[in-house]
Every structure is written in structure tokens, then in C-alpha cells.
Length: 453
Image 1 (cartoon, one colour):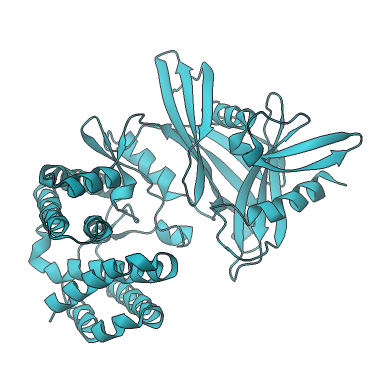
Image 2 (cartoon, helix red, strand yellow; image 1 turned 180 degrees about the vertical axis):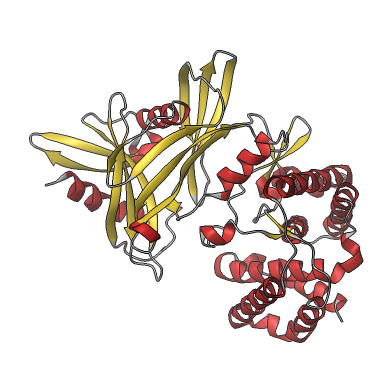
């Protein structure tokens, strides 16, 4: 039995049970596109790029694996399977959970090393001068949905350092905005993103691309802010306890505007064309129709929503620029009293090239406003929670307006329209995944629709 056959036979049933596998309920139909190897101690390390054809649109996955002749201690949950090799048994593990892969990956990034190609190429690229003297520990961050992150404790000549390396599971042709935007922000001196350490860039066969090869990012390493608190949990606890959050929300608005300004400076802006606006309005209408089909209660609001969309089409729209793209409280940390923004990857289900296009900063603003709404909704929409959310939303907008110098309230209908579109998206998501939370976006849609009349 060949290595390829052995690995794919074991990976196929395992893949369908992973959190990041997009085609839940389908039996994977796998094709190996290419692989690469990096040298590692104690194990053989392969990274496979595997196309799953079971979905309507095929998805390319990155699957790092390690081969061991002796089982790893306390790693049963990471075991993909075993297969015979002569008289021996080979144990195949999910790479990020194996210290051998974790160390080899970080060494590859910080050392600008090139992998041994087996149909796919991979090269480490260091962004700074982080010299890793030794790696003390590595563990996988739990709870992620679409990627796998490894947390390291390392030693450098400047002292100890925590590093997080995100291994992208679903791959796309094109630069990953999470790498590009955070690295640019860090290079511009922003203290509102973690320090970037480096990445892995890859190339693989793709008949749909010019020249038959696709290129993209495979992994991204940056400083890990130990002790930082997730903004969603911080805000939820404050709302539940009735603690005033307006100063924190105002500061978050300021930081958001600062990041938008730096992105605009780093990547430029352009005035939206009539086609840009028409495409945005068209996408809103398409998403609204899908939502009405899946959530019939939205149909009664269609007239008001259509009226809002029609009205904003004649307004002056702001410039297009690079943005976060999937902005909410879960993408922000509170570290030493300062807000830190994370995960600039954009909406995971959108093609990478779409996520890398200039967009309207109002989309990020609307996303955060919706996130404040979710705080109240998740607590049962008590009067206290609703008042907390209203005050926090207002303070966030005030902070953004003061820092950006742009009065978002001058054309509030446009911001409302972006928020409606986000709530429409949320309604479909909740109907499919969390029906008990469907009332949160529906309540927002009713409020916003009534304001547009």
C-alpha cells in the first residue's frame, strides 16, 4: 500500500468530523493536489493539499500530518488512524497536535526555509528579526471553527515570547487578507494589532488559474497576547452586571477609526463608481431574497427594506478602502487596557479574491453595532441589557465619529442599510444553526425597518 493511498484512506473518514470541514453531512470525495515535507525530529512530516469534491463547489483543504512508529502520549484525539508498514504499525496524527510538526513549522517561518516539494511548494517568510532560540511548549487553541492555531512558548535573545501560528485549513488562490492587512498595520506602527512574525506562502496546481498554478498563504504567525480578554465575554459580563460600558465602547470606536485610517493610508482609497454601488445594492437584494425564502417572517418587512435600499442608492457614498470585513466583538481583545483587533480574514464563505477587494468601512461599523445588539439579545433582551446596548452603540459611534472626522449620522440611512444587510445575513445563519437566537436579528430588522418608513 502506497503512502498516498494509506494517508487518503485514513484522512477521508476523519476529515468529515473536523470542525473546519465545510460540507457537514457529506462523505468526502478526496483528490490529492500536492504535498510538501519539512524536516522534523522524531517524526516524518507531510502537508497534503486535498481537494474535496463532495460539495457543490469543491473545497481545497490543508491537512498536515505526522507519521510515527510509536504512539504519542496523550494524543488519542489527534490520531487520524494507523496502517501497517511491513511488520511495523504507522501512527498518523493531525500535524498541529504533534510537537514535531509544531516546531518544524515555526522554524520554517522564522528561518525563511523552503519545504521539499511533492507537487506543492511552500516557503517560510519572516517579517522581522525574531530569533527563536528554543521552543518550550506548543498546544492547539481549542474552539476554532475554520482554522487551527498553535500557541507556542518560546525563548528569544530578548527574552520569553508567546507566539500564535494560524494554519489555514480551507485554501484559496490569492493573498489572505489576515496576513496582508495585519502585517501592513504592524509595519505602519499600529499598536492595535499583534506584532507579525511571519507566514508560509504556497503554490499548487490549479487548472483554473493562468499558468495552471495557484498561490496563497498557508500559515501566519504573530505575537500571542497572553492574558488578553475576549471583548465579547468582557462586554457580556459588563451588560449582565449592569456595568457602564460607554467609555470602553467609545475607545473601541476610536481604535476602529484609527485602524481604518491606517488601512486607507497603506492601501489607498478610491471613489465608488456607479457600478460599485449597483453591485452592493444587488448583493443586498439577493441576500434579502434568500433570507425571505428561509425566514418567512422577514417578508412582512420587505417593503420597508426595499424602500431603504432604494433611498440610499441616491446618496453620496464614502470611499472604498481595505477593511476588516468580518468585524464584531469576537474579533477584538482587551490587552492591558487597550483594544486589539484580530482575524482580518473576512467572511470565511466568501472567495479570497472578493475578501481582498476594497469595501466600505461602514460594513465594519455596522458589524460592530450588530455585535452590541447580540449582547442584549443573548441575555434575553431585558430592559437593563437593552439600555446597556443602546448606550454602548451610541458611545461606539461617537468615538468613531470623533476620531475619523466623518459624521456617520449625516446619512444615517446608509449606515442603517449596511446594518439591515448584516441582520439579514444573521437571520439566515440563526435559522440554520441557532433557531433560539433568531429573534435577535428579527428584532433588529423590525426596529430598522420602522425607522426607514
